[in-house]
Image (cartoon, rainbow, N blue to C red):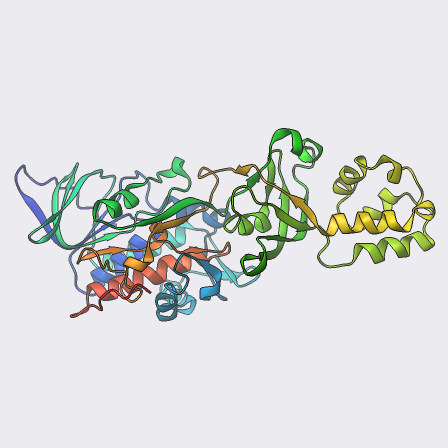
Length: 420
């Protein structure tokens, strides 16, 4: 992408129709659309590397959307807010963009789509879209201050002063600070009078205190499909995905998914064999097997996991199957189907894939992403209180919210705020 590197002479100001803060997925997509629709766009980002979060996503292949995207795949204090944007820019819309740029992709499982040749293809696609819209990009560029002006907004930067009628905040969340995440988006929102739904790490591994986790720490690397749940009643949420043991706790898709819903101080419940009834399987084995319980259990769950469980019940491990008491086998099966643990915490923002919480959507238009507090101010992407499941949903929110905003920026009479 061509970069506007000229520093404005002291006392002068460069004028744009819109300034977009943040050159990640949402910011790049919004800039490209708005520029191609005729706006003079300036895109600013403080990071030295462009779109690093896209680059590392999906193991380097960018899980860029999910075919099954629906509002139910997102959490927010205002759960209906995401409906409008998602309905007006679908996974098929982004797929069509990839096809126009001849980017190959494939479906992995559960509707997750990945680039054939890696994440760099998506970044290059977004850059080309911005080039076609003649978007100016200042990067790296520090924003020193933002204020309202007669013409809209003025931004003091280390490349000079910029002014625009409209300002789009696409600065992302707090996740993975080592690649440049900051809280600037939340600070700007508060500066202009917006409320922030409390932020927390999401799609993040769960940790346990060293003493309680000691029996399982040696299982690091063991993976198993499980059913995992948290909450009770109407707040109960569950997923069936793979779980991964780590030295400090639990990770893997199942745990990342549930982490977005888990509340500090509450337990998670894990069914270590969601596909079958362990009690019936063990009862059948008792009738015809001369092997030890550990050998039979290792047929149903990973061997190392079976050994760890039976280490806490040596009297069961020592008996052949034929000598096991029915009530002991039933009790063991019940514990394996409903393993309850209370995490101490999470691995925090350094390992979180996204940030839950953010700019309160009740103060934004679900049609335009525009602020009801400050005319001409917009928020898109992860900085907003809309958080998707693991599996491409958060990228789809980035594309959809960016498209809604870009269309509003170029509309003659953008819709007002409706709060979702």
